[in-house]
Image: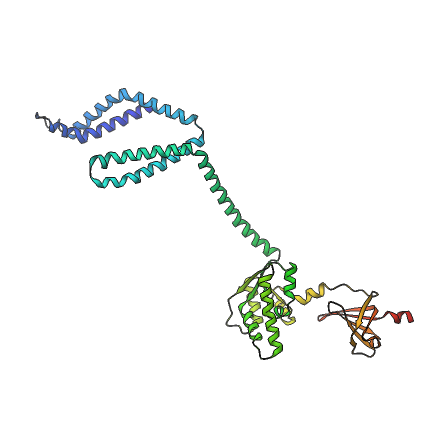
Length: 371
């Protein structure tokens, strides 16, 4: 089959050459030839017959050469074949691009022969480079593939991390003005209990700046404290802080803007404002109240326990004294009026939990002994 393909190629090549050149050769001869002999069709037939005769001698050589190449390629490792083929293709393309400008000279040798020679030479060099540098080429391809896999995996991990953060409660935490001025948010961030990104809206910053510029000394100090807390969170603590520059011009109240932002971003409002807490709950917005957290982490005190406290002032009722725990919990000491400015042991009688905090009622332990 391959032999007939070679012969058909020779016949077609001979017919083409005969059609183009044999009539001109006949006209160039000295004797006068018949008209049918100088016809292009006659030249086609003559060229086809001549090269068919040549193919009878050359076809076997060409077929054997191709079979030798085929056996060599079949026996060669696939990596060598691929690398050599890639080098050959690159070399042929490079050779064609280098030789194409030479066609503009118009000189037969330079315009026709030299580009073909350059293409073959560069193609051969490309094949040799690809064949001999196969290991490096494979390593380069593998490294590119690994890098692509890493980038793809990184994107998947990033998307997965965002979904995981949403499922695990790591949404954006939107701070309101009151919780910033309060200052305890910085301590909570420092402990690492607050996850996710802290979002500070620009309209909250504007309100803080307005408070810091107030003519009232108390308000001015509160505003400056809030700005100092923000500066500490942003520069000293290991948390992500994002300044939200948007605004809701159709809404006047800062608390309403916070609720709107939390709805749009699926974020969580962080506050210690009781009223804002209730508004968020009514509108279905998640909220973290610092006061609730403070109450939750206060030490548990049970009736019957003995506490050592310092009575600092009178109570509202007769003979009552008031003391405080380290966390600020108020202790009402029955009969503690006479024990003011003294360190005494008291026994807890009851604990009252209110929305404003926790209140502990106790009586001096000395009174128990007396009874």
